[in-house]
Amino acid sequence: PGQLTSALRAARSLHEGSILNSRITEQFDTTVSHLRFLEVGYSTNATPDLPNGLVLKWPAEHSPAPGRGDPERLFYQELAPALSSPPMVRCFAAAPPDNNPQWLILEDLRSTHSTPPWPERPSDKHVYDAVAILAQLHARWWEASTLGSTVGSLNTEASLTTMVSGIAANLPGFIKDLGNDLPVADRLVLETV
Image (cartoon, rainbow, N blue to C red; front, side, top):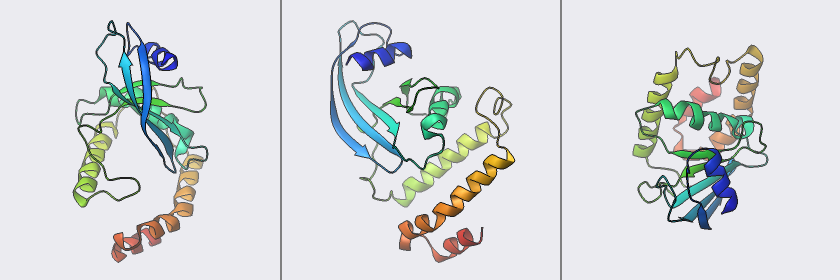
């Protein structure tokens, strides 16, 4: 409770009061990150009114995700607050930029949103909805003057080469994992790119 209180206070999410108790209600470890779903209780003088369900998230030791959580921290601290739509998961605290590993304390949306159990695949409708939201997000930030200056950094030839090499190295495993869920025509396109 003390560390959670300190993190929320440092992020200015918790102005007064403290977390009196916390317990892990569920935990997931994926190839990319660790997730701990927490139920917390606040002191009666806690302000503002924060949810009792939180998620502590940090990158897995050998996570294939770029930047070991830093791009995700940057997203929640810099980009998401500037978006009015679509609504984003609230981030209540994040590790300082120089912290290793990076971590996030997010709002737990399990009571209002559902996903299939890990690693089960989501429905086509959920996939299409997620892609539509990602398209809105990309459209909002695509030509933003702040990208590469105050938010994030621009790609260089070296960073693009590294990214493409990583995609090429992971593509066979991705195709194998999808199996029959990936139409043959789509697989052929991916293999030629």
